Length: 442
Image (tube, rainbow, N blue to C red):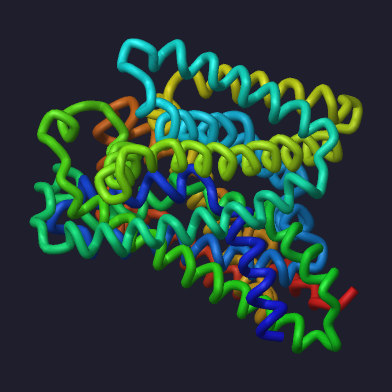
């Protein structure tokens, strides 16, 4: 049982491990300054805790999240939510981000400054042509490469972190940015959204179930116990990686010019720390490892997103979806990493609260019957709060922002939490109650 859980946990670690897991922790470390530990606690809670909980609940879901959301809220909402979610973890955010991160971490430091713009275009053309061709006929070879290379790369990152802690651990951190100085935990919690892992857990829970079923289990109890072992393995792995990378970013010396620039601090720390600790030639090795690791993720995302859309809207072929998503990913990748992160943040701040609310409802409903009206009301209220929060901040609508900030825990960036809990409590008393489907081994 422990062996099965550890093997599946390692596989899922490889599936989850991508661009965001690399660049955001050191960025947080650099910007959080003396407030690092509060900030990384918020980051780990949203980037690891919520993602793993979503994954575990999904693997205990006999018919998947689409069925649960359709039953508890409505079929049209389930389809709309999952379409936006797959577009987020696919062509609009994650796919272009893997390509751009590969370039900025691995390739750009090897080029002269006047070549970086042209270099990105050339690199992404080659990158996406290869990804597209493989996505048309995804093979087990690519999957095996991902399973082997990702853990190897993670081990090398751990070595970098340990050596970095020994070399720079006694150095003083940078001064914290205004956001972290004001609310370190809340800012770190929001930064955890950028990993996309909680959203990906909704989709990857299907892969987890398929993988676990292939291993074979004697009974339901063994299956459930193994799922918890999987969750613990993945959670511990990512938590250690995030804290280590964050600490490296917190202590690695960064010049005032770089701190003041729009350059991604995580990319800078990874590249410069690798060269400082292992020597300049290590950049070539880093480039190869980052590119191949991110490439396997890109192909996997093109395939899974195209399969979802082909299954949901079958009038359009898988090949057409794969072509469209590859072209969109290529176009957005050439906007640059900073632009991708900037425009993705508002969407993630809407999707994440809805995802967390759905997971909370599913968990409670596994123990007690809940009113469908109450569950619909809860998701509706959370959706409204999430939209209002973004509209207020993006369009500088002070009155809207003041309403959101008046909610409990707004300073911790979770104004939707208490309304979610209140909605679930009301669902215990409102009419039209339904029980969650019991889990049965297939």
